[in-house]
Image (cartoon, rainbow, N blue to C red):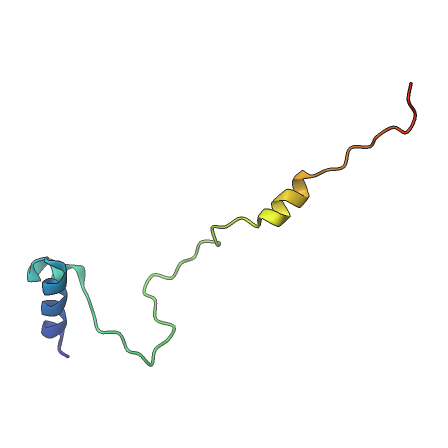
Length: 68
């Protein structure tokens, strides 16, 4: 597949103009290169461990065994 074939196929599939697809810079991926990412995600995972969150929030309150 040539670059023109790829651009044409993407333009046809998306309804965008060929000019717009070329401007966005699509390229053919090499299936043997498994670590390809031009802009790797450097953020920490955006998730909450709810079990850990609950554990930290549940602080035991000392109860007096002596009734006044």
